[in-house]
Length: 152
Image (tube, rainbow, N blue to C red):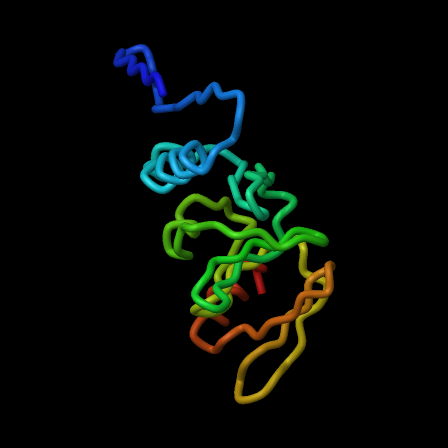
């Protein structure tokens, strides 16, 4: 594989282009390595989140994301009907998302614009249902932050 590196002060942010005739395992590993080592803070003004569905990389607009949740030690991103995987932990994603997103528990971030309803639940918690049918609980620890985000 031929690799070229260009260093210039004209570039505001690092980027990579890969030209290949076949998407091999090594090319996929290179893509994952580049994505994992990219500094999210540099790209905090973007409204697109790169995620994986199988071997495909999908670019999701923030407005299409309903929920981001850690399940089975994997960070999963949900849109209206699909589930994607992303290697970044929630705390890093939380710093890149816009103000439409709020953490509702240790393992879940939701898009406020995708909420169908919120109702009381057990032991001081609240129950949330999104427009795509996903459900979760808002823990007491994050309830005041959630209410503040909704101006309640």
